[in-house]
Length: 333
Image 1: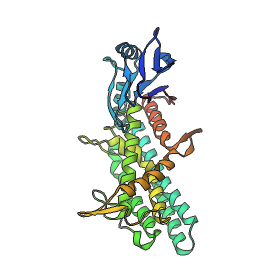
Image 2: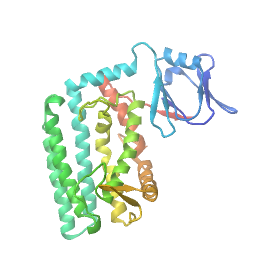
Image 3: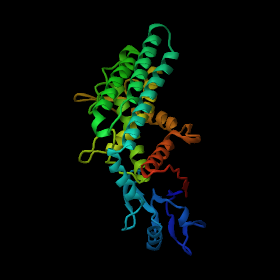
Image 4: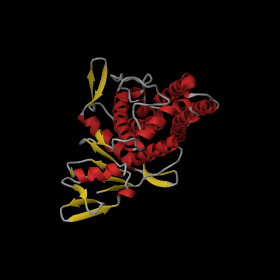
């Protein structure tokens, strides 16, 4: 299990070779053999004896900032599970598992695109519906092509990204045409957004990047070592990988904000070369997006919020890299 220390003033110490967490008048005890990691997400204290007990049992202790972003971690000086995962992560680039993961994430991305377009098509009639269904069919065909790619991921990355680029052009073109005329856009744009739709989408994806990075670190993976995306200095390549199949969450929410007339002028500001969300726009988006992320879905036969499926997937990825699958329960105190 993972222990999430999220109550201000909590104190983690040791009582007879067992972790004990004090919260005012309450005490909680956990056997170290059952703890995979300790995550401190608020102002709390941990004794050096608790750190030593964690080290003896190869338990990571991770500290997050007030926004939930990983800041640092403690682990044993000897080779341990986190180092083993990262070594396996680097070696996987030249093994079948690297391409397997890259194809899986890309395939989920394309399936998500096609499913969203079909959902939008079912809510429309005439040529608009036909356009969306045809785009979904084209993306499905690209996904079938993806499954036929074989080899080492470093050698076929160009083919993978070529399929991704073709699907993106079809997808965003169809999505734009399905919007009311004043909100249609010319493809994706970033830094800055060239239109209000992309301003909303960029902000939503920024929230999602933070969730993915946190989940990657909690699972012991290296956020800088990717498979689908290449490793460059200070590039969070694995974050780009993990977010791929989940981008559709942000796109679904933002599309319905515009098609449902919830996004309107006054929620964004013009800046040199584009647009940015103001406080009103961020508030409207975050309210809708957080509700979407907290919605419970069935993930691999388990009921989890969409938000928590990211961490579950990262643990699964770490297990696959080490040669076994694992699920880790989270306990919050």
